[in-house]
Length: 282
Image (cartoon, rainbow, N blue to C red; front, side):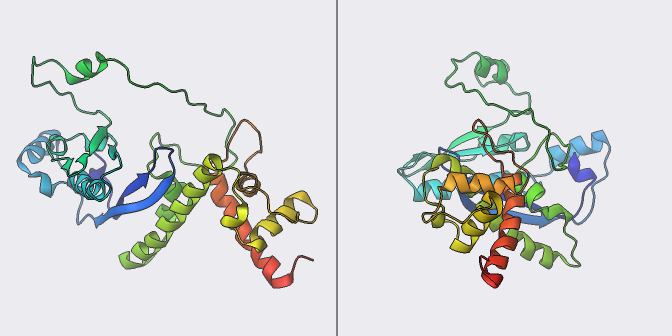
């Protein structure tokens, strides 16, 4: 388990998305630090897991997150709310947590990790789930292009914008309070990058001036097109593609920019707009 080898501060956010994948923000979060590393043998670890109540384990954060999600569902009775968690949340206590609200029920989707049996005939519940009718299928196109920027090689990336874009794990501060202040700011930045990435796809014809200042879109336009900006601002999708191209994205009709190239491009936008406001368009 990772908690045997890692210390430091840990960040567990609960993010809200709509059914189109548009990020709505962080609705709850938990930050904690480990006092020491638990070095145990396999048998000691198994005994500790059996004897320690769930409140004393780090996985309790999933139950706290579910309770926070239930409060959100309670406040939005006309909205179907679904809590989604990875395999670390596959704990019995989470499934036993109440999910009923005054407006219905909070649904729960967890990536399977443990081998469990059903309460009926005692068969493996994974086999029972696979034996039910398929409710939905979709195809995902994955680009084969080699990334132009160096990224981590780990298989799992959770809340990747905060790690690879803002590089929160690489920040070095003397005290934990400074890290937490930085995390508070970067959480907003990471949300905005994700928001712009999805909004450009879902509402491509919106005017870019709804998001970007005049100095931002005009400076980018002149830098990339090498001509005076048009009298009317370009669409949001066109502007996001241009900004992402400053971060390494290759503009193609069949692809969309991701959060990482957009993040790098937005840093260039800050420099260009600052120069525009300081020295003017000429």
